Image 1 (cartoon, helix red, strand yellow):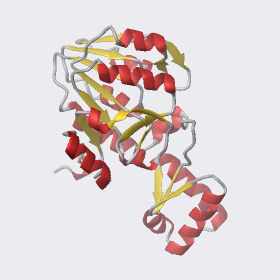
Image 2 (image 1 turned 30 degrees about the vertical axis):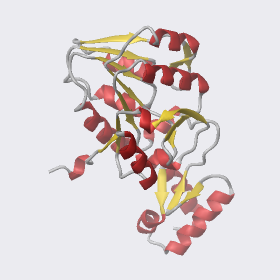
Image 3 (image 1 turned 90 degrees about the vertical axis):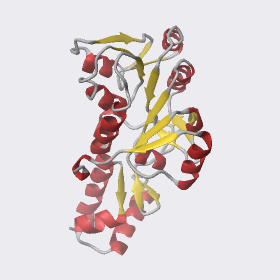
Image 4 (image 1 turned 90 degrees about the horizontal axis):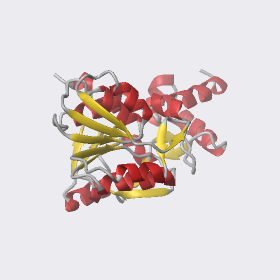
Length: 259
């Protein structure tokens, strides 16, 4: 495939998968690693991708990528993470699910649960769970973020502060290798911090691509989390922090690898 056709396809793969690797693109296109590295360098110079070790990711900035794009990214790992996480959510508990496509995947996996009170600031999750006969859903009102159906701001934070949750499951926009959990919207950050404060136990769900992304606002640290559910081995520095803090890391087994 000539470069003029190859480069748009590389962008499409990055949007679909969240990341491209030199090795994967060599296999996909049947060209040399040098050719792929040149393509990625040119795409990085034009601002269409951002180079990382072994490949490239969608560029990071102070604005999150669109919700429709986020729903397409790493769909299979998100489902694997969700199926792993819901095994650790008991019946008959109060549960908070916040904004995020991975938390939406968790909501979709809760249909065998009973006796849950689910509070959420994510209208998509409320819709997903609306047909479940034994799950009570409470929507934490606030400012509606039209881009993704999220409810954010002071009113949402005030509603959340009226509860005490047995368990919260939260997502994030990015993770720093030093353990910082990051997001783009300060209004959402305040809500997430209140969720953590009002929960007896907190799970973080985030696929490994979040380590390749950047976001400006800090929510908390992985040391504030009880269990971190992800899809791949985490960076060594982050793993050490979790070990020292007593934060459990649970890596999902891909569905096609299960016997």
